Length: 304
Ligand code: ATP
Image (tube, rainbow, N blue to C red):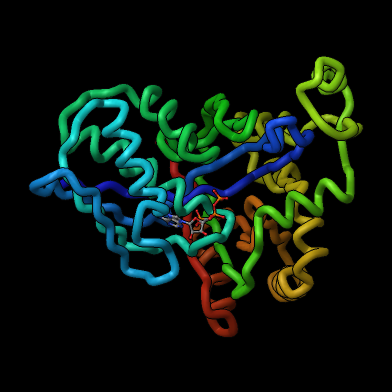
């Protein structure tokens, strides 16, 4: 049996550049692995079935499960036909903007590589991961990276800042599709090199003015400057999600008032989080929030 940690990610920045003609959105973001993780166990079975079970009931336990999709992908690419049972101990909230499903898929790719001794490079697994979902390549590699394209084109960011993170998962169902659709309707778009892409027909929609947020974030991380990192936090989808889901905005406002710290949203939401410079500060925030909220998590940046 092989056991893999499937770590969640948070967005330190997220810029949506434009909608592409393939229907995906071109994004430019800085992603960071945190130590909140599902535990994925892989056990070889007789026969050739891929089966899955999980400690929660709100994810599909059939071929739609991203862990199963990843196992199928691994077998297809490697040519192996062995059976495997996947057990997911779910700790990452589902459909939360924390890439839980992608993390499980990435853990399966890494885990099967170990279980079956195939010795593929992480880069190869990340390439297969891109066929499963935009966030899977990042989850295969982990750490911190600038992610472009659909999120699959990665440039590692080497830094040694390890702040703490307190996350709150509001009990609100957020549709990633609706958040992006609303972003399009609002029509915030960018100029510059993107105009060139528009000219050659690679994008739909008008370009937006201004530079992306990740340059400042990468500078802040590379300088190891926590205050700069706080200042560079940015998510294009946050105002859209707050508009669509006023209860998430209400919670964010309440958290900022109570804690007197900036509160951010990860991905397309609804998970909210705040950074803390030390464990003591993080624990104080965590304990305060646990008093009136159900799903609160204490976590930390991890490097690879
Ligand atoms: P992202 O940040 O990559 O957009 P997310 O954190 O918002 O992802 P997930 O937790 O990955 O969302 O779940 C998205 C959808 O994927 C859910 O509707 C869920 O049912 C489905 N899903 C399939 N497999 C899994 C899995 N192993 N874990 C969680 N969700 C899964």
